[in-house]
Length: 116
Length: 113
Image (cartoon, rainbow over all chains, first blue to last red):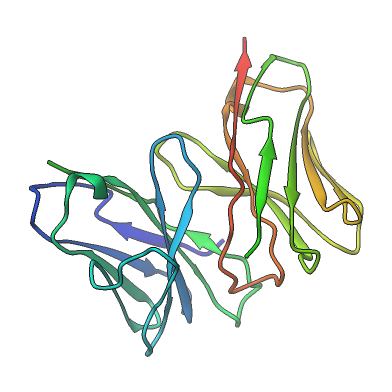
């Protein structure tokens, strides 16, 4: 199956700093990537849809100025949590798909963010 | 948007017994019905899926049944094993592929040895 890689797998940062998480499709080109957030013992909630070469589409309630998404190439999307606060501590997961393949979505390993 | 609920939210079964998790959805246009398994701290993994033109699909110990009229589909795990312990999510979709997923509320399954 296709491989989607996230980096870093975990990160600890101080309140007020910014953190960048990368999502890469390693063996296919992903025209669309999705970013999810998962709080402990809860479901995955979609934050935004990242489209290569255009602006991301954010879900209702997600601050686009706080969660910056860039999809600069067909293999890389980045999520930057700006001015992170403890309430941003969560598990962030990306998924990627492409119309050229079966259409199945593939998930990254996830990135656990802890803001002190 | 799609409203997706799962029942039960937690389920404990004795090893070797069967487990059934039900997913109800609101959008009658949904036509692709996957189930994901997520172990603690790991990514969700697709374990089985079904399309709306069939009512049941089986893969070894795992099966999915679909009732489109009633807008629900269920995950069946037989002969459960300790490694089946995980959180299971359904994620009904309108179109297969390149579609943002609305995950169900999740079911924590614990297999008791």
